[in-house]
Length: 155
Image (tube, rainbow, N blue to C red):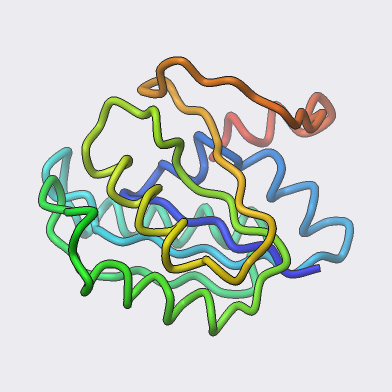
């Protein structure tokens, strides 16, 4: 199975579904990660990018793609954003996409969530992950990561 995790910033994927991705890679699934910014609004983008690359390696991701959109400037109505996401969806050919929740309070996260839904219109399985900035999250699927929770913390 191909799994594509999409995040707005370095550390979003790790916080949101890092444990699931660790388990999936260990079980032989192909994990792909796509991050749209380098996180310059919250720290040194070079350092954050290096940390993201280390996380992808630790997870066992088959590929990591890091785009260069400007942090805090993502816009859900941008066809450029939608087209970029769609390009990487086509590269990964995912069975499942996991991304931000539409109910996240960070506007970059909401922009990525809604753009992913549009870009992934032909993918039947798009799920959301919860991070500390997510509000009113109503999970419908739970995945037990208790056996890798310490490793998720390392991410």
